[in-house]
Length: 184
Image 1 (cartoon, rainbow, N blue to C red):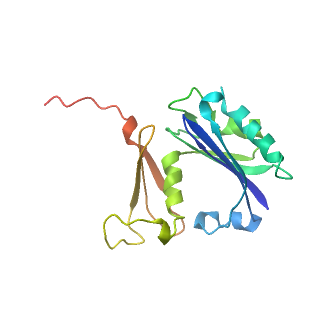
Image 2: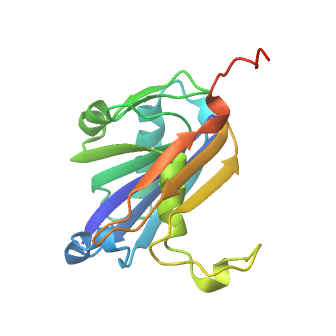
Image 3: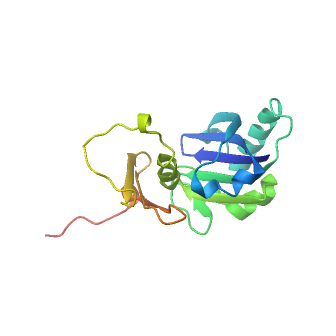
């Protein structure tokens, strides 16, 4: 069994989750057919921490009270803000996150930072028919592009499309753009 750490990091709150997955299923993860068991999760007020690492260490200590061994092999953190080369300066916090630094500081082999709407885009793929409320009837194709939108720190946006072996998601931050007013 392999442990995975995930997190939703925002200016107001951070939610962390320690999960377990069968080692063989990690290889199939891209197909979204993996059975994931949550071992421990917790929510923290982001502003109460000067940096991210102390929060994660507190999470590990709390998880260790309920989980025999806390040793994630990989982590993925969804961040409300832009990601460039696996780094992020959070929009509403002074935190600067770098995947390579977090890997060493937390003792996790692989740490990946992604935009929060990229994470939402991938999460939409796991929805069941009973989780979906249809706003307008249509005839969608399994190969049609799809979009996700949501208000938060900015106007979060993302789009994705299905390919032969994967479904890449492309995040956007429409509400964080600065465009001058029209001069017409």
